[in-house]
Length: 89
Image (cartoon, rainbow, N blue to C red):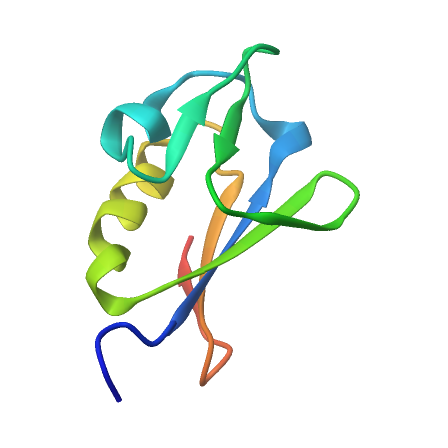
């Protein structure tokens, strides 16, 4: 399996976001604060109301873990796709 194969899924509850911007500070490649003061997960798709998902590779995991860990309201979850195991929180 190549390093470019998605291995993890980020699940982001945008409604719960308080706009602390810690995720964007930790990983500006994937997270940004937009006009309404909340974070957007770049390249994500809304899978249900207010829930956004994006798959990432092994090489993208560490910086997204840092983004998730920095979130004061814990609205960012990371799941290992193959096992379904929740990596964070």
